Image (tube, rainbow, N blue to C red):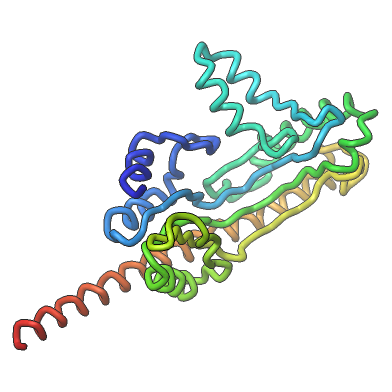
Length: 273
């Protein structure tokens, strides 16, 4: 399994993220884990992101995702088209309307004006055409959210998992834990750890047919101030997320150094014995 995962990472096979590859912000950490520890292999990762995300179920029980349709239409490969759609769709809603894995410009009003507002206007134009959809009204939410680094790591055994979680705890990844240990054979149980922090923000902008600020004039001073303040806070979370990611990698280096020292000590003891 480890060899197959590493092969997939090298070729970006089965990557269903929007980018279709490992985030550059976390690629060095992923490479370090996979290249330095035989007891670990990463199964999925995200360096952290800000996103404008819509989810909800229409009366037909399906989603209408214009981004996927547009990119699929431009592809001559059905496989490529379906792959794009899987990445873009979201959970029965419009999915990701905007996202960035990089920190935003210091003047976040630029991002508000050039990216967030156009995305909101496009969404609202679509949403007004669905005004009679009662099911959508009761199930949907449009969120402006920040999600921190998240890293899923398959561990060889519980001892390896415990050491990984110790590194997570020491570096501020306080929401880390074992998320699965039920698959695989009894002798080789599949143990998956999730490494992440509580650096989350989830601002509901639209739900139950109501905007958090009315009217929906996204270019007004009120909306501009609200969105800019929200993204200013997101930028502080980006900075803290990067700090904790670096601390986690340093903790892993320290763990590897400690393990190497213990191994050398055992070898010297064996020679003397």
